[in-house]
Length: 152
Length: 446
Image (cartoon, rainbow over all chains, first blue to last red; front, side, top):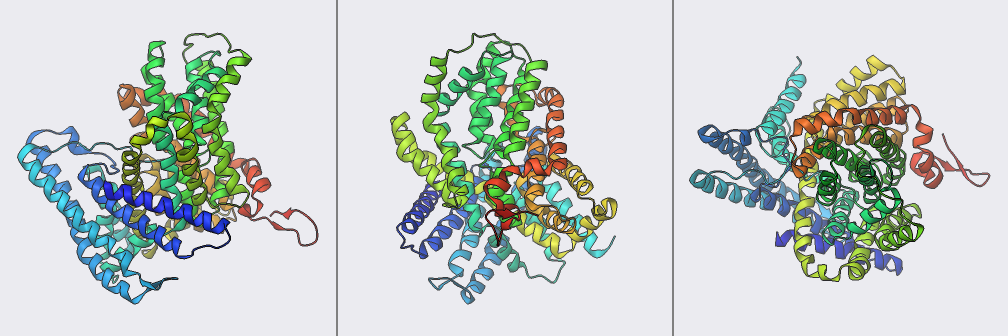
């Protein structure tokens, strides 16, 4: 959560600086790279935090209407799917990260891998949080999704 | 079924199956794409690039800013002043509080691009008063949900930002194009509440002095739409920059003037908004990977072929068929993934039938806004019924007559493009394909 706050504060400040430097007729072109870095990392860290808080966007939570053993099975299955996606994000994201060293961001010439790294990092965090939920859920039962309403 | 057809079916089935089982939308989309990719020659790491490309769009930066504007205004409790103004303006007519809900939503839509914020504010602030005055709970939930959809029509609208960013359509043009349907929905809701809604408690008309006082109180928040639209229309700011200037205005002017005590809570709300914006954006990233795979499997070409063969080159018929498609799609999936997944189809049909992209965008956005109150995935109605404390089925039944307002607005938007495009043509002519007259002043519009 703190990282999400840091990211949104970071890109709010960098876009503000972008507007101010442009109005002062001496724009800092690298600010756009800084902005996108905060933005992309913010999205991926936020995704991990939302997974931990069950705050994601859901179509429906069929499991919510169930109880007992049946619900437990559904909840475990749902989290295993998320875990599978998270593991894919780690491995394929890592391969993509390595590939990112062949492309550069303009104008700083930083490898694109510096942004691609956000995907496997997000995968690691999501996987950890899902494992935490699975362990806690098997011990104490699963919490309901907090909201289905984070939508425009 | 061809190989590609089967893969498209499998991908869609996996998404819907996992989604309705309770897997978060973003992960259900990615799971569907990853499974299908393994049956194609495409490398799995390249799907990660598609995830990344889906959000590496400068225009999407506007999404967190417009969410932040809504959150800050709500959390700082500045909205109470706008409710007071709405009450002073319209609280005396039949169904006074119902009319206030609609008028407030119009004002609030000019500040926040999110229906969710609107539903939360209205349900908490006006919901209890409406119940006290004897309004039916189901009617209250239906009206609040319907009014909140205006946040997606009246600028700034997050749906318009996403549509413009992914479809390469002018966001400023979409903002302006959304004003007419937004007002039509608002007026329609007011007429419905007046003639068919509960009478409520009749109040005396506010005096001119009371209206002036209420206006003075609300002037600080009501400057925000002027900053946003003024900056964009003057060409001074992009939508993203207009969003950040609005945030700066709230932080440095509105909150210190109206609720200085709130500043202590600011770091917490920034962190919350940081989390909130990531939820639609990871869904956008996942949906763009899904849409990319769909395009690789030639899904858009097949669907646009079906629509073209049924409608020929008649733009109105194409739009009607697309509206029908989106009403069905909007019943099952959220508006943002729907826009991104179906964008290749929309772009194809818009080009083939020579429809103005802003006109098409406005029609699609109004249709998706309507999807926010239709079952089973009417998210605004789900939220409103939860906040008001009425069963979803009852709220849905109460919202059926209101569907007429939305359907009439959609049909109007389809058949009267000149009315929809009037504002963009006058204030942002280039957004609708007009170009400068080389031999005289003004613009030439197709």
